[in-house]
Image (cartoon, rainbow, N blue to C red; front, side):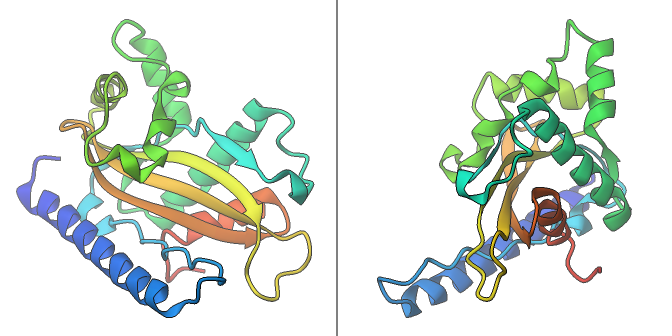
Length: 225
């Protein structure tokens, strides 16, 4: 993405999102008592104004986990659980954000297989390193170099990385017993610069993991049913 106006638009959306999130968090932290559960930061919507008409590869999820007390059995097969999560994300992003040309994980894998000496297997990359805010603004090597090569074969600049998916017991007041919360850490990386451009944690409640994840992904594009 070389249009400076589009870059500026993405950075502007990102900057406003972080400022608002920080302000809301400061208010929440200043008003809560020590024995209260911390209020999570609100999910920031995808910065679609800066990504419109842009090709954006979506990396496959590589890290998933769940609180054992939920009793959900879908995670006995880790590979199947990761594939199911990718399927949910891939099914929701294109229809809810059609202004972006999404390159979904299966297509990204095909492109990587066609260039095995240049691109790494996206399922074996260090995507999960992006899950923590302590990574900072720049993506560390060797993941940085791997990501740059993979995104280049897709003829793109930015990549969307689902860095981590965890399921926790719901703390939403009034939630039925057995309800869990999906927390999906999503990062947008400028692969050309190796720089983290945007980050949020999307959350959604549900009686099973895939309903919860569906609601979390929908939180990235508010205003739609």
